[in-house]
Image (cartoon, rainbow, N blue to C red; front, side, top):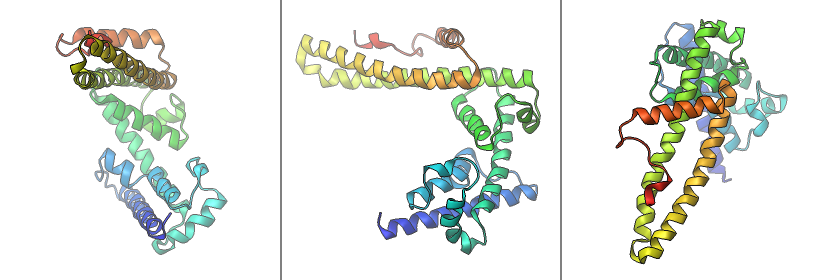
Length: 255
């Protein structure tokens, strides 16, 4: 890594640390409207800060796991000296910000319709926040943090888990529709043989993509307690509720 690149990463890390502190102090002062989800995750989150330290060669992979280690303190504190902060200060401020972020996302989820839009964004942000805070999903500690109860949590979490699984499936189908057109154009001048080659390539790409989708859905199932039947029924019902022109196309698109 060039010295210039390292300096740039360190400066960016300092900026994020300062943002993390600003968010925390704003919360102390009762000011709660400051950043949207994207800005918070990119500009004012501990994982963004650690990522930049890693890019600068100051932190390693272990830095993601919980509070700062002694080794990380030794490496990172000199970088933060100009801000009059230590990395423990950054972490404490980040926890405060992340707690509020988890509550904010949960409130949005709680008020959402039974078929929420952009469910995966909120679902992933919410569960990542719980993991960062070390708060088990579905625990009494979580209910106290969110000001909710178990029946409400299970209902909302299930709705968002199912909608997130559907979004993964639907996004894959849309990508495959786009890929289908490109593959057909690629073999358009090869006649019948080209059509067979196009079908083979499309099916191969489709199956590889679905393997990744299935892995991602399995992770959602693990978090939410859903089973395969729950997800399959929900996805089928959502597809059937769409018009024929809106329903995602399957592998037969090339036939």
